[in-house]
Length: 391
Length: 218
Ligand SMILES: [Zn+2]
Ligand SMILES: [Zn+2]
View (tube, rainbow over the protein chains, first blue to last red):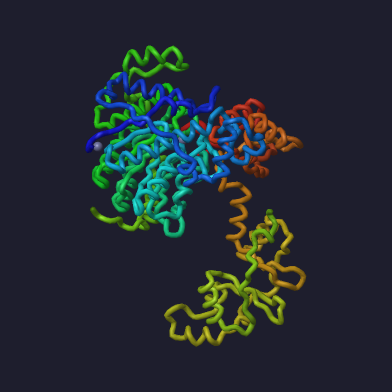
């Protein structure tokens, strides 16, 4: 059915979280869902429940021994010393009960979202629980246990030989896990815009990481200066992504929409506002219609100001996915419900006021550095993308 | 792990003093290398680089070039009295020798035998491993006083936060008249804020990453 947008979600997905005061808090997903409902953005739409990923789905990109270790960890059947080798049981990725089931469900949700779109049952799909882009083949990393986007792309490649997927990642952290999984693959273009690895985890994502062998030119990285604000962020995005996608000609765009580049995010040093979180999905949406008959799957990602940033950013994402206008005012009922739990005052408007985020003193310098990065990418890497098939 | 033998290239392309400049340059080009040890009777007697050969021959386009390339022998142009490394040398010692003598390559010799070659790019690769730059991590620079136990104290603070250290390097640093060191630590965490806070509370200034948009360090 053309024009239909699908929100893939189930309460089971909200089990993905590490408990206690860990920064990755699934409450952000609950708040997002309820904000979409309170804003009236779910009218005429329903949530589609996904199936968990199978072991076969997971082992498209993960080693079987790693999957077995996650399974044992969630059942308390493996010694910590053994799990630490897999990045499990660390401060970042603590063990939680049934962690395999929770993580596999997220992967299944993103695989399901991709199948709905590629199969033509939906035009666009959103799964805010996905976007765990740091997970490596045999290692949990940066709050990510299984790599949902990686597994979904690998599955699509099996089911639709020859399919070309563009992965677009605007999380503040480099999308390293997905990049390494397809580093030598010219049918998967990975694009990551993030705070430079000189300042931020995971430390990778320089322009010179451009892919390997046949995949050379198909890993694109735009590392931004810390404290980059909206105008420079959007300029860098516009200068690189449309050209890259137009050359590549994907069959599907899978976008990771981590919102931790926001100025309020406690884990990063970028200074974006909701303007970026409306601009990025709107443009990805337009490019999907221009280049691949609208086939677009959007997933979540990082975002650690769960009160003021994540629900608004991802409600705006759903508005873009579902062809709706984002209302201006935050619903009183939603503020009343969550305001009591929030340690900070909740905003009354869905958009940040530009006046609250004036240009910083070094804005021009930062902009200049970012421009040099973009110029280098355009000079050295973009031309390596072979122009894809025209429809 | 960080000895010359772990980073050197074992298959060495060599020439003899009688090799012509044309042959030697062709070898460099075909194998993508810049340095050729020169052997005579199995013993290393010199080293020739593509740069030495280019400097000794007429420029590209010069009508005399082809003849000169055939005439000049490696033995005429090679450097003698070569600095070499031992396979068991620490990589930093080899790096220091290359840096101080401004040379791009060290033949690796065991007794009289040439067993490998170490180039600047091999040293770079070792450095990447040394600093753990290929492992996901967050980079911190911490100022520590020059006194015994300081680094151990910093490591203890990191341990108490339950965070693994990917790598640690420390170098003496001048500034504000007090002798101190700066330790570059890569932490295996996406969220170093707990470590940063504890370090600062314990009196260790964290110099990187910068925390204020208009602050120092950027
Ligand atoms: Zn559309
Ligand atoms: Zn992130």
